[in-house]
Image (cartoon, rainbow, N blue to C red):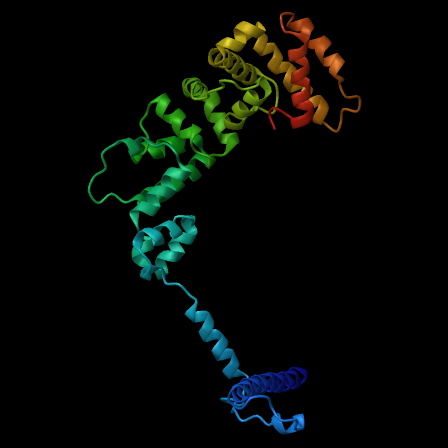
Length: 323
């Protein structure tokens, strides 16, 4: 009952607004033709002469709806280059929905090629001559299926990619696939790299630590190759490989700062321990900068005090190196 009364009152308000607009428009036109209006009572001029088409609110709603439909842009009426550019911002799910409306545009191979290469940056199949009738949309579905399989079982996932001709059974190709893919579960990836040390070696070589500060380089390294939750042989292997790669990428820093793979190895462990000390809520007495410098220089005497102090400042300001 209350809703019905509200609709009646709202209908009357809209009709009154519409009548006043018509009156003002008519009055303005007469004023332009006849000059200033006579000083007559305002009540005589408020008799509306325009008719409201339809005595229901639905008319105004239909007018508003029609204006909205006039502002709708059909992508098929735009130049193909512009339409494809607009659809290129969609993900796979939205593109499938768009293909229900614009079938030709939604199934465009250029769009699906972009989705494949933006999600899986490197695949062996990209560098081969593709046969006629090749579909990037089908390739996307196979890559997605293989990634889900990898996240459940890494060995089966890699085998799936090889069986579909997506990957070549070579450590360097597998390492590039892992390096440029962000859909792989880091826990399963850690299990796979722990079993395939040849792939791990190639994956480390893909990192470029030139002109990077040591803590930032270590963060970048652990962003691609996640550190284990506990200290063990695998963590020692990762830090050893990182130390050699960091020195190889920064020969000038090694010469000027007196760094070596063994010294970088010690500094990496010091940074990990400092990260835990400063970020863990269970550690109440935090390590001071003076203590960190003193403890680190005991293990790496050739490293300058200023360099070690900058390491402490980086962890204190930015945070954990393996977060």
